[in-house]
Length: 345
Ligand code: TXA
Ligand code: MG
Image (cartoon, rainbow, N blue to C red; front, side, top):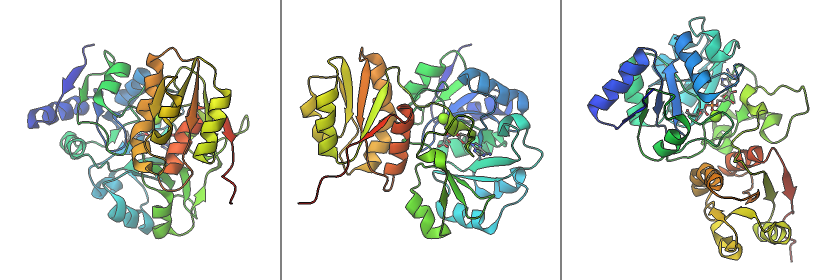
């Protein structure tokens, strides 16, 4: 199959919408990461997403809609809190888990009676969905297990020849996936940290329970609430070790333990120190927005090198740091060494 590269002109938007309407696959830009879209109410089209990605069938997809008025098309119940959150944070990096309607096929929800709903902040993608006039099921556009795609070039690398088209809407402005909040339980539960910080959600929702899979490796047989959280994810080819705690101490630890064939993913301030190794930088120690934008590309970049191990510094869990740390720790299969905070003097 030839994969067309589309831009953001009116004709390109029409073409992307027509492909989706006819059951085809189109990679679409969002503010978080690129998505691999199909008509979410067309079981046959959704099946093709799983094939193209090599994704396990039990891992449900998020439905993307152009505005909150579409919620009723897909959801049985829309509680008042969901409306409040949609008003405050949509379009934007928040996915809400709600009770699904029967019109949403099993293949989309992995057989669950709930469905993830999201209104992305990229205007081109909202225009495509509105024109296609179907909610668009879209997982991240990477091959299953690989780091997510934040540019159209990343999508080409993973999906060329497997899908009908890629819409190039520029690099993603947030860089990590949406925050997933389950609103079918009380208190609401954070299933995946993402582009909307937990603290921001708490300021509106009050208490939020954090699912164990966000911060820990689950025991064998244990089921996370978001099925996707159980898979090793975002992984470059070489094994990753994450070093948490004070950044200067983490750098010391890495310098003392790295093999000559190792690579380093570090904060900008430490790049110089590791100049003898292949280095990718995450952004400044305190610049969590930049870290979110860079984390997936940095992980992908090591696949073009001969490194046999990757050492990564890691932000703490404040703000977007929770999502960045989660992606790094999942890339490492939760192989994490904590060097602790610097002692007070
Ligand atoms: O930012 C994003 O959310 C991106 C862009 C493309 O919108 N999409 C994305 O989709 O990250 P994906 O499929 O890569 O990750 C969706 C996650 C998976 O972990 C899946 O298990 C979980 O959401 N999920 C989807 N529907 C669910 C449901 N009904 N209940 C619990 N978890 C669900
Ligand atoms: Mg994904």
